[in-house]
Structures are given as C-alpha cells and as structure tokens.
Image 1 (spheres, rainbow, N blue to C red):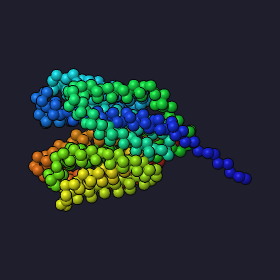
Image 2 (image 1 turned 120 degrees about the horizontal axis):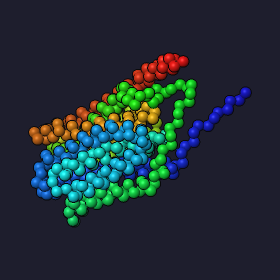
Image 3 (image 1 turned 135 degrees about the vertical axis):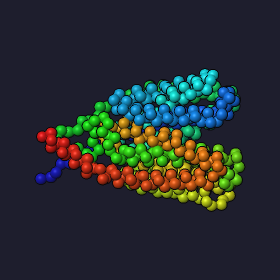
Image 4 (image 1 turned 60 degrees about the horizontal axis):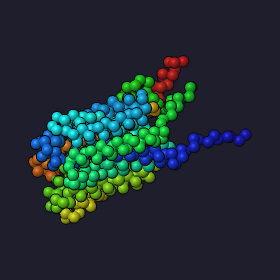
Length: 427
C-alpha cells in the first residue's frame, strides 16, 4: 500500500511578505531616527537653553530609561491587543515628541518631551517581531530580519543627514518640525495599508497532540522562567553596550590614537553604519539555516573583536582607521539577522511580544549604562582602553550566543517532561 504524503503549508506569496517586511522596516527606521533627534542638534540646543553637554546627555538617559521600561511592558500590550494599534501609538507619540521639542522654551520641556519620545520608541521591537514572525513565511525570515536591521541603520544615518542641513539653512526648530513630519507621514502610510498589518488569530494547538518545547506558557509571566530568555536579555545588553561604544566614543578615541583628522571622525561612524547595512544583506542569506545562527554570530563578533584589538594595540596610518570601521561594521552586520533568530528560537509560541519586549529592553539598558563607564575612560585619556573594552564586549557576545543555545537545548527535555507531567495529571 502506498503512503500518501500531505503537502506542508504553502509559502505566503512573495509580494505579500515583501509588503509586510517593507512596512515593518519603514516603521523600524522611524524608531532609530527618533533616537537621534536631539544629538545632531546639541550645538544649537546648548546655546538656546544654556545647557551643558552633561545636561543634554541626560536627556538621552531619560529617553532610553523610559524606552526600556515601556519596551518590557509593551510586549504584554502587543500580545493582548495586537501589534497594529500599538505601532500606530508609537509613531504618533514620536511625532508629538518632535513637535514638543520644536516648541520647547525650557530644559524641563525638553525632558518632558524626551519621556514622550521614549514611550513611543519603546513599542517597536515587540510590535515588529510579532508582525514578522506571524506574517512572514519562515523561509524568508532571515531576509526579513536583514531588512529590519538595514532600515534601523538607515534611520540612524538619515537623522543627522536631514536635521543638520535644515538647522543650518533655517533653525533647529524647523528641523524638528520636519522630523515630526517624517513620523506622521509614515503613520499615515501604515494606516492606509492597515489591512497588510492585520493579524489572523493564532491557531490553537490540536487536542491530544504533543506540545513542543517552545509551547505557550500557561501564565502570562511563565515565560520569565525560561533561562534562554534571560540569556538573550544579557546578550542584547552587551550588544547594545558594544554599539554604544562605537557610536559615541570609539571614533574620538581612534582619532587620538592614530592622529585621524577631525573631519574624518564623523565619517568613520557613517562608514560603519553603511557597511553594517551591507553586511546585513549577506547576513539574511547566511541566516537561511537557523541551526548555524550561533556560529555566524560567533564568527562575526570574533572578527569585529580582532579589528578592535588592532586599533587598540597596533600602530597604523590614519587613513586605515575608516577602512577598519567599515570592516568592523560589515562583519557585525552579517551577524544581525542570526542574532534575531537566536531570540526567535528561544521564544514560546504566542508570547512573541512579551519575550521580545523583555529581551530588547537589554538594548536600552546597555545604551544607558555602558557609556557612563566608557566616558570615564575618555575623561582619563585612556583611548586604548576604550577599544579594549569594545573588544571585550564583542568577545562576551560570542560566549553569550553559544550559552543561549546550550541553555535552550538543556531546557527543552525538561520543559517537555513538565508538559507530559501536566498532561498526565489532567488525565
């Protein structure tokens, strides 16, 4: 007797997946754009409000602390209300915050608007990954994560490129009004294409079937008992710490170590971001096989650490420094999609918003905490130490990625045994 093999679920139409990926990526770009609303305008804000750079930097601390708290909480909102209304709220709050910054007449008003912007920024990762994981076919998830990372990098790159010329041509207030127009424009587009972001109800598990190791936890907070979730949180804390060093202090430290001309310093960061986006394109193809995602992260971060050690310890011509920034950005970018797959593989079904909210809160905490320590090194002119810290953080990321896999594999049989025990009790 011949065996009849039932076909698996057909892949979603490419056009449908591409539309979802594009819309989510556009929203993610606005999130990163909002993180750099103020820093490019610090010279203008310093004069307008008589504020020190320490006070202006504190606005970013307010932003990221609020964003961290909201990111952890918004995952529950996403799982309860769906990602679409939460996404609209986030974009709207970013637009309102930009208008508030533009209308501010005191430092206190800037701080209040930083709170609003932080609330808006905090919802994006739980929303984005819920939409991508639920609406994009698994065969295209690597590319979806790649586009998601690329649009984030472009959001960082566009903010200073847009705001500074407008401030020079007109004023910093006009620049922030234009930034609000970006957020509201994307919100309008996503509202018009709202049917593309609608989620169908999650399929219930068949009765009597064995529950997978990543099945939905019984309680809303049971996912917090999964060790891999907290390992992912730690991974993203160190990832954000490394990124914050690159974005804030690494260019200046390299300039002092290797006599890099001042006008090349900002160029180093731009090269890093563009090359990171290029690396993410390759990373999308590399992530097509989820089983190797930890190895991809390990190789990418290992090469980045070698670059950081070279800048810290080896003599080199100034012209080589921007090239090394590009190399480091590219190899780090190739690890981006695999980084996101590591989290997905540790996420229980139908708890995507909650898990991504908690895990990606590590990003905000890392960006708020690590610069405080590295800034102290800069104050002491310990420029080599800045790059050694960067290399150490990248090394920790290699260990963290494989620790997530180890904990996930160790926990899988235990979770299965718990589920079997529960099923036996139910009988």
